[in-house]
Image (cartoon, rainbow, N blue to C red; front, side):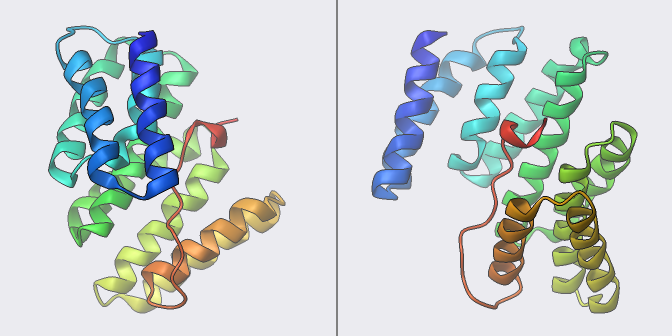
Length: 192
């Protein structure tokens, strides 16, 4: 397990310091190769995968995401498992948006939005709404997309999360062809 943490950290550090995705993937793949051998994962393993999921190519990330969802099944009654499921699905949706697979991304968001409401995860709900708005806008449903983006911003204004609102505005600018910034990668810090 410690080796997995080391490889995950190394992968993230390399990506942050050098922006070299291939080198970062080298270490992320080591984590995946080790975890893929196990029949059962612990929540800590799944959290680790969530941190590095975006480093993998989209097809690999989606397959890993499907495996994560299966691995979360035994933990379905735990709040942390529900939050992990929400975060994984929202992150997969972003990767699919990046790959212009809008309908597939939308299916992840449609699944996760009711979970966010049920578990009162308003930060994640706002992100899911914004990403749904991006998808709808990109697929020609601009008015409907705009409504979801407004909902996202209204939620963040209501809970006074100005930092996340600022990051979300950058993400919206990036995907809706305004000023380019890095997209928001939802991590475990947003769960509490």
